[in-house]
Amino acid sequence: MEIAIELLDQRIQEIIADREHAYSRQFSAAASQTMKAVKSVEKAAANLADATRRAWGSITRPAQQHGLRLSEQIIETSRSLAISRGDASYEELRKFEERSLQAIRIIVKTYNRYVVSVVRSAKPETSALEDSIARLSRAITDLTQTLDRSNLKQLQIAARESDQLARSVRELRLKIDRIQDANQKLAGLQEKESNLSNDISLLSGDQNLRELGRIEEQIRRKEQEVLALLEPLSKPLRKANRPESKAPAGLTGPGVSRLVDNPLTAILETPVAEMHGLLSSLHQLIEKDELFLDQRRKRKSIEAIETLEAGLLERFREDHAILQANRREVLRQLKGSGIYDKWMSLKSQLDDTLAEAANCRSLIADLQSQQAKLRALMNSDKAKIAAVLEEILNERVSISLSF
Image (cartoon, rainbow, N blue to C red; front, side):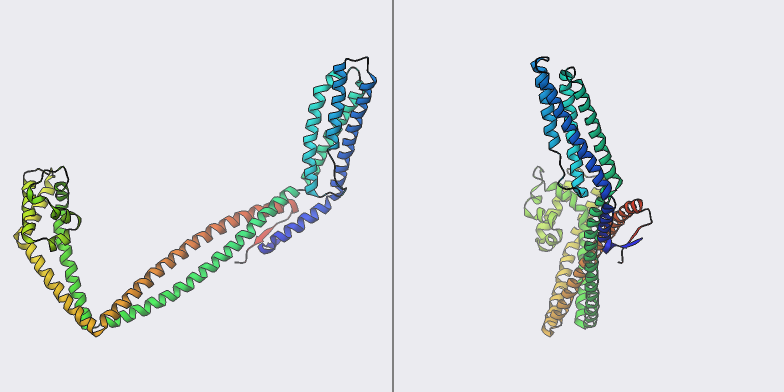
């Protein structure tokens, strides 16, 4: 039997209805036998009460009270059991079974508590009550076994799992739709990215834009070179900048902090004389081993300071200033022609498009991961439901998903 997942819940409900109809006579018979046994217990308890009253004068008052209390409590418990109609549903019978099990436990406990006091004065009646209680216990057991044989409990569990599976199917459809929408959006973004890249490529052929790129690359390269030269000084500068450090006058003030936090800005903006004084003071501290550097760091730091003091500092500042001036002039020309603003707008659009496309790819990957986990969970649920149906129907069952 193959069942489309969309029709699974309906098919299980049909199987439950058929199963309940097929067992209806057995259910009715088992419930009827249980009620007969209940009436028998009630009658036996009433007979015991009559016998206890007739024995007045021949038994002690406590024994008589125990006998009457035994009868009253058993009759009261028995009368609490009832079925509203003969064709009670499976759910109603299960509730009746649960009440019956509770009742038989109370009845047995009550019987064991009081029977010793009255058994001698009403032995036939107590024996009849004991037999009727045993028959009630067997009838309840038979009812439980009949309900269990129907396998309706397993089918109801399967129905609940089918409801959960139906919710998973709806969730899976939503994720598939979201993935499809995201893929369509990504395709549009990729097309936009391609068009923007082509526009930028065409615009980049402008001579002034090429010159701007060349100048900015030179600036970046020179800045990287000086930052690499300053890197060995980072550790000794941090040590010298500590509050507890006894640094000489040349290593105090905001210049040291600026060189630690933003070395490139410090090299470009700190007055040359001040910078030389700072480097000279640092050189002295390092040579005297007052900063406790390892030999390799000490050597590298001294080499960097000597290189800067040998004229590299001034050359870097001068070259940087010339390159920045050239950059400003090229930018002035580009802005005057409108090319620069157009180029920056295209680059900004491209950056935004690339970021949006990256977010879109991340969303697709996340949704695909969720989809895979959901499919695995659904396959597990399908297998469990199919196994229950196969055992009950005694035939091969498969649950199909069309997407």
